[in-house]
Length: 437
Image (cartoon, rainbow, N blue to C red; front, side):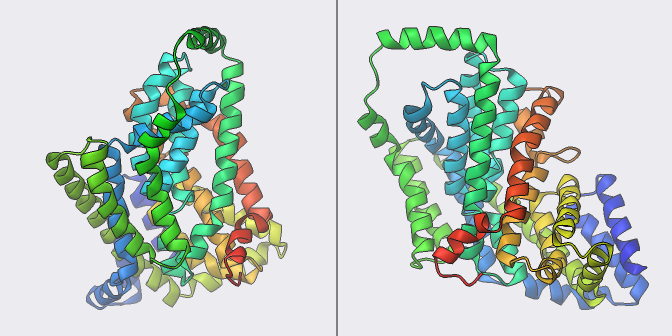
């Protein structure tokens, strides 16, 4: 009864528009009041949970994402990607998708990816006569690739709350991320093929391009090389065991600052100060939320919620595929109501016992959770990245809804189904690196 009331209070608080940390605070306060527990005794629980160096990677990756965005590394990346797919039908859309994946691998932030790649690519897509709503939707739906292509802040959180290897969780989401990027490119291709205005513009552009001198590939590669080295250094350091994710995040910041200042010359002292300020504000909000969620999660464990979830779901059906379907529906709803960080911290410890009970590897669960919550960021009613995309591209949200639903149906949901029901997609790379999954 206490759990049901606390969950109702949590959902009602979120629906009313209360900020996420406050909603979780009201929820655990309700449990404490009904169960006769002292709130003062719960504060050390939250502090002890977030007092770990692993979590330092999150504000550092947020900071590096802000520096990269302001340092104009995104333009060098998009220019480089355009060499390979720029002349294909729908090539500009593919550039936006691939650049989002690469930028996400550097910054680890979906919001930074959307802000940077959106501001660069949307004007180009509009000029090429892409449908405005589709162009903005494509960029918004590609930005969560930063949550799947490592390093990913939600995978760091998942590994932390469930006691898994951060590197194994990183590896688990790579193949689902590649599948999603491929499906986004395919949808973009058919959308362009059926857009008469785009086809006419593209034909004229290709005809004019024949008369214009090509920018040498070597020049574009040279310009993009410092930016391309970031994922090599960060991911290479993590996968080789030379650096922990926290150390890699620190290296990313140290590397990005001189590159932004002296190579791409987009970073200024005022811009750097703003990056530190924004990273501090964001990190403070994330850590406060984690503090609140950890207290609530601890109370849920004390009230035996994880085992009750196992009994409830397996009591409805003992079929593994049916239980997986119910878990996915639950996570989709959570993703629609709250941000990806909160969803990870809430779903990770609660649903992990369910997944273990039906024989699903915790590392595969990391990938399933990543795809679910990535989809939640662009699924109404919350859809934070959809609204951010609308602001970045200056397109009304209502114009983005239909294209976004199409992308969810034909890209996100197929990726989720494949990740859920074909374990090898998420377990192949962790096993290749020697993890027992």
